[in-house]
Length: 230
Image (cartoon, rainbow, N blue to C red; front, side, top):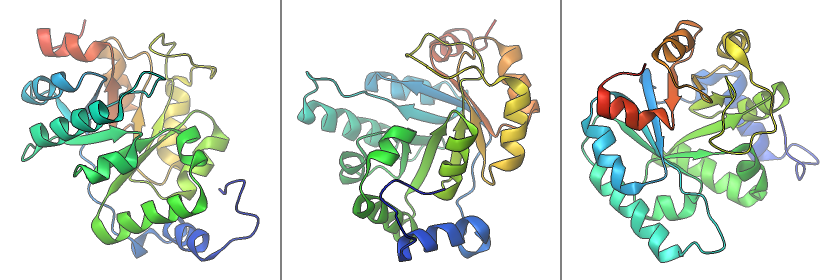
């Protein structure tokens, strides 16, 4: 449940673990069930929201050597502005400081991104959660990552990949519905299923297995265009 730089449990670590073991000490924000769309195109955020199919949207722009911080900041600002007052929740992947500077209220971090933060950054982020209601989702791909994610007391934990996916390089074996069902029982927080969800039967099966939400990445635009998946 800890991190490499936590050689002994300090105050911040003990506080975090207390929230895991006694969740009544922190009242988590309600997590709406339904479909969760992921896009790397900020100009599509509004269309995804207006489609009415998604209760959660994530803007996932991965940093590259050519990434311009001003353009990244502008994209996040536009997405936050376009989602203001809408019922769907906008989650910003990575770039957490930029996102918070631009008014984002919900963040998603991969395991490597979360583990890559130093202790001060993790404490800062947790303070923003407890004092200002910032929400946090974390990825997990294995039982060890599930334990570490739960140790951070996030608002949800993503489980994946459920099925083979080509959206990004993925060294992890597909989890399948049996693992998703176990994740949903053991995570202690809502679980979001992700990876290879291309058909309606898949996301419905994931919800039946206990997922609070199911992610559509490549299939999100198909849902917008056709109102359903094949």
